[in-house]
Image 1 (cartoon, rainbow, N blue to C red):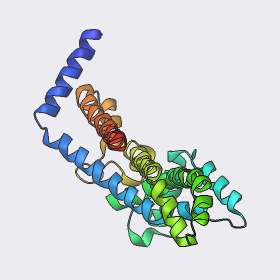
Image 2 (tube, helix red, strand yellow):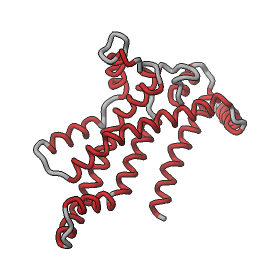
Image 3 (cartoon, rainbow, N blue to C red):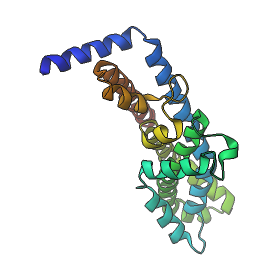
Image 4 (cartoon, rainbow, N blue to C red):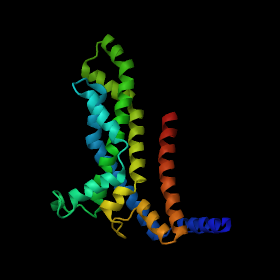
Amino acid sequence: MLETIIEAFSKAIGLILSGDPEILSIAFRSICISGFATLLSCIWGLPIAIIIGLSSFRGKRLVRSFFNAMLGIPTVALGLILYLLLSKSGPLGIFRLLYTPLGISIGQALLITPILVSFAGSALESTDVDIRDLAKTLGASNIQTNFKIIDEAIWGITLSIIASFNRAFAELGIAMMIGGNIRYATRVLTTSIALETARGEIAFSIALGLILMAVVFSITFLINFLRRG
């Protein structure tokens, strides 16, 4: 058994080092889809996080509780909801997003938005306590104070974006249900790993898994390194 595992890892590394075109295609597609999902999430998630982190309004606790609760939503449940909405008979079927890379990106963006909002909002709130009183003492306006708070919390916000990308990149349920795992079109690392493992192509699955983990760890390591620097 051990020899079989070692042989599979050896073949997997060989596939990666040889630059197998299908593996590279799947990896590149995964990065693009999850990267665009993260961008979409930032477009609508960061403004929400800033409002929650820097403002006081009625219902703020309820809004925060909603996003915190959404952190634990099962990906297959969200995938099912999106499938029903995007299918031909669904209310959004006219946009033809089902079984497309864009459809996966939108689904992943919805999945990671609670992560971005909750983590970035918490980073802003924790900085707010220390900065706001000092800024008022120095005569800064509310806008200037808010920009200073955002500047001080920038690393916390950056880490929330990275955590969101990593979550999208390693997600399976939405990619499978919305993308359909179509070869050369919507097949990504996670869906390919599930497929190839079921087919008994263990070496190919290991190669994909190594790339997935390498991307996640490399991005996280780079951000932490830059932060320390």
